[in-house]
Image (cartoon, rainbow, N blue to C red; front, top):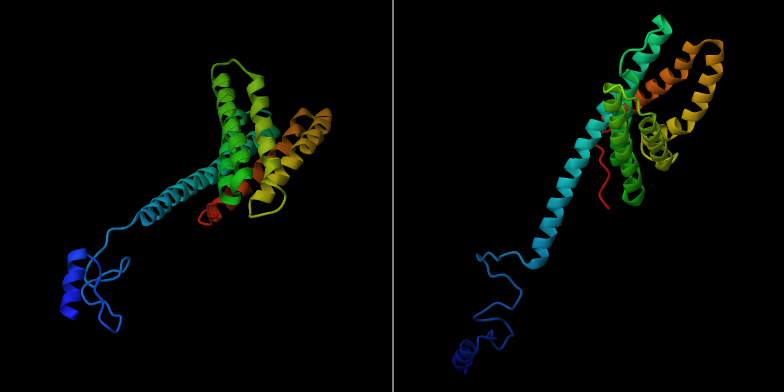
Length: 231
């Protein structure tokens, strides 16, 4: 009787069972056979592809974070050198002001990728890229001796909006970058008052802002490996 059942099962392609309920000539569907490798199913392929894309995005974010940290250091140093030169010898190094604008935008971009997730990061990244592009326009216009003040204002405004979008709490250096944005306008107001005494004193708050951006850049580089988990 068992042989007959086995032949019937072989003819129909279904597993044959012995009286105890064990599989005798095939494995149950969905179970692997010892020594036999199965090709990954659709779900496994999708998960592998999503993991690969997440790894690429994380790698890209880490690269932008390193660039942003270096840009913050360089941009802040440019403003410090400009301010010290004006205070010391009353002479402004060429392009020291304009070159810092796109660098500050890149620094904000690195901060956004290091500290934010989801929608808020998209807003800050958009403002950072706008600051970078308009800052480059301001730099090129200065090289061409055109002096497009509108591009400087646009870059500064985009940078300020991006800073204030970061929020005052969260992972460093996000809060520091936020408070730099909050203190920028009061610092300029203080500089305007000091300029009434001596025009060169306007550089004092700008030097402080430059030092603050250097600190942002340093903290960004120090925390560069702490890329947040992707949403």
